[in-house]
Length: 483
Image (cartoon, rainbow, N blue to C red; front, side, top):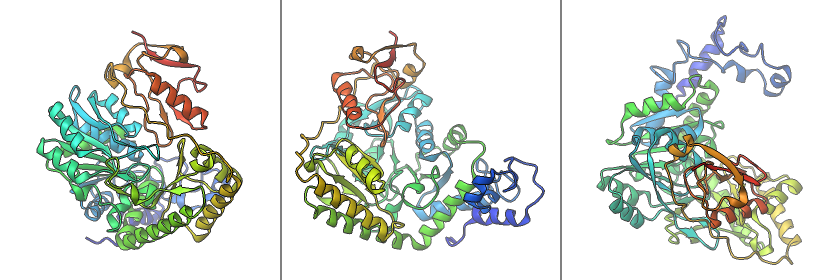
């Protein structure tokens, strides 16, 4: 296929050149009706491609020309049978995977470290979750991979599961053995669904973990904006399976995607795909070289640690995406939250996320030498300042899987009440509560609060972390099921 083409970009440029008298949405009429300050800052061109469905620009929900061709080019590049553009982020892709794969009342096996969008999909679908918990990398206090042996055991226990959904790579760059998991799923006549939001770049270098589609996944979702140059909220849903119901996927996407899709986002997907097709290997290799160099330099700073491939083989970690930097200043007595705050507030360095022990920095092909030096210089200063600090206590153990009292959908529609936080133990949560990022729920609607869960959430808040999903951000009260 002609991977040097960008059909959606070509279509919107053609339309911008025609510039017809415009009586459609959006109402700003190219750049004419845009706020003056916004227009001055952004320039005029971006507003010329903020269009709607026309004879030239095609229709995302029924593509026949430019978008259809662009999706086919993406499918060809990543080795899929079908690819769908997503303009509501990987969130809607995860929801569409679940909606298309599992009917109300059917079981789906879900890794316990999945993004909260997966649990929202359970509420929409009415499917019943069966959880498989990743192992824990105790030295770093993070989730490891999903064990194929445990997946086989779970399928023996729950032979009526219709699919397995895992996240790989996860926010930390942890990759599970997708090939083994796919073989297990297919042996049991089920599909493997992969939230690969953080892994679209993995297909472009043999030094990176092998991509999920290449390993036998039936469906996967990728956030091209996370590592590959498209704009935020633009993603892809790939299908490579004889088990998938393509029409159900299309119908599901019509439910969870906007009926007014952004042509700015679709254009960015199209051009990012073209860049990867033409230069993906160089981009991936450059990111890897930068990241490996930075990791070596960080590990030479007394008191700092940056995880790498030594984690592989531990806690079912199959591979590590080395473009992710897991950085710990725990030996200096700094939490991840404290390190993240210091980097930004004092050195103008922003990292992706923090937990109670680590920060995550994502290195991409677009980082500059100045970016790298700013990070290294800041870390050296901080390490020197805290050189007399007392090491943090051992990593907090991540809470185990909570007990389900009812399905997420039942809990969503159940009668609720507000109680003091101190009385939550033993009650059924009506909230999906997740430290964010990474947005992995500690407890979901329909699950029972335990001391372990309550203590962990208090610890995250006390350490300076953010928590999403709380009806009362002070954590004085919590919403539970009224039974």
